[in-house]
Image 1: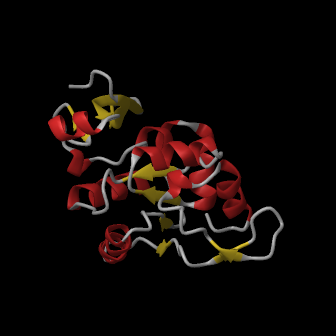
Image 2: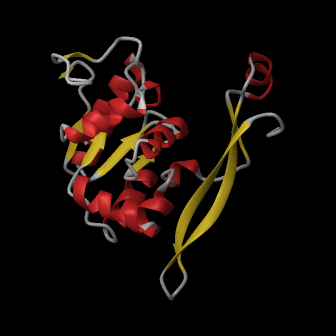
Length: 194
């Protein structure tokens, strides 16, 4: 089922008595054609407990640069693999993903566990711009707030000055973090947005 798909390795982190170590949980493949998507779905994974995991948590906890950024800027919580990949490409190593636009109690408990090891100051929800992402962001914010997390939601309607130009809205063609250019993401970081 992963043949001819773009594959992401999903890793978790476990305590082994001497510290933390990464553990491979599964591999997830993204369909590259409509035929694949119709046959086995847009994403296909070997079974794992997705509702208990946060994608890229291993880097947040084990990579010194990611740990430093997470302590300084907080956690950027996105929907998916490509969002994390684009943010990391732009130098934002403090990005993780829900693997969807909703959050489970298990994922909240995972964030509590991560926070017990990394004292991040806040969570920025950077979910997709579509109605499902906007609704999901509000629901996730509410659930995280009730667990004591300081949370802000990325404002897709804000005015931003890219390339030194007059501030203007983020182009409508940008539907999720992965649609942004590296330069746009770096500009948002320079402006203190995340």
